[in-house]
Image (tube, rainbow, N blue to C red; front, side, top):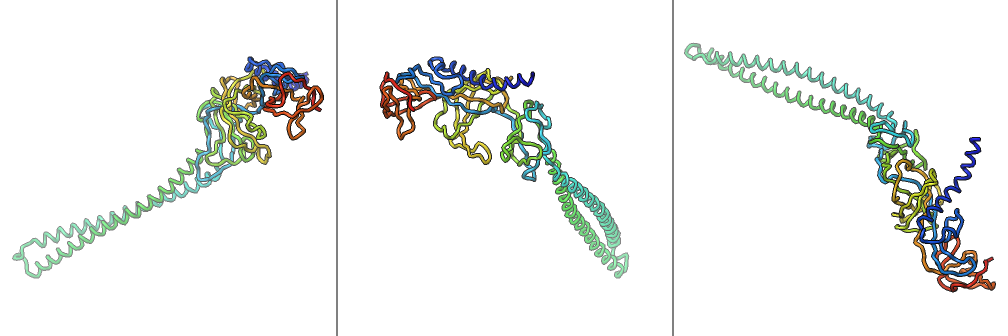
Length: 415
């Protein structure tokens, strides 16, 4: 029994959608009288009160059905960060449509390469630190020895100065000269010890600076690897519904194992309070709609509800609808007059009924009376003859006659 009910729903759904669209069009075009001129499922039902067997004057209202989907006007994008690697595989990604909170992990990119580099960089940093500490210890011993020798030289100089200051009259001339010579030697040794200490300090500072730079470089590599690993865990910037982006290379949503590259938005959290419809206009229908035209949108999920809007943008170039596809389409944006955050979700399929501006007070001829097989269109008259005419725009049931017929002429059915 549940399968029977499901089957009946599948059969009834197209009829419900068609009926909803027809009702929406009638409500938008209440000033015209053509809602009953065609069948409920006819996308171009005539909206003019005409005699199906004669040329009559009335209003032509055409319709164009497009398929599209809902998109959020604004969304917070989750982008692959800048890292030393240009692209990385996706190791894990949250389910499409999942409710997330700010700070929650939503995507993990593969960090295997960075993990290996991190261990090597940490070993290099540890080695550089050991080299620096060992050199600092060696330099401390060497400088202490140099300072000790300087202090010894200073003491000897003081003693030599005291001995040399004894008056010459109290000593022999030879002894006095020896004391003066000893003073000179002590001064030279003092200067030499001082120079050795200053030279040792300068050399030590140079060596230590080089080792500090090596340690800083190793630490910088460690921080880069750590930041890269942390950055490869992408988190939700705010609360909302997660929408996984489409992989442009595969034509489907991103999945675990897909490659993602720097700067690419792999997911987003849309702002549900403001939605728009993005539809596709086949290149064969180029020129049939224009910005400013009214549209009625029906969600496939809720065929009993319709939402009005206006065409606001049509891309100037038609693009392929899929990878290796021969079909091309223009991107059409429809801004909705109202949105329903409780029902609308990005990615929902939408049927769009675009309603070009009506041609009022024009001559109309039923399409079944028009013969399009020749170089120029001809209309079958009730007398059996064919007369060449100049036609304007058409819908599924009628065409505008610009020249060749007059109101009231009786018509036949073209073969």
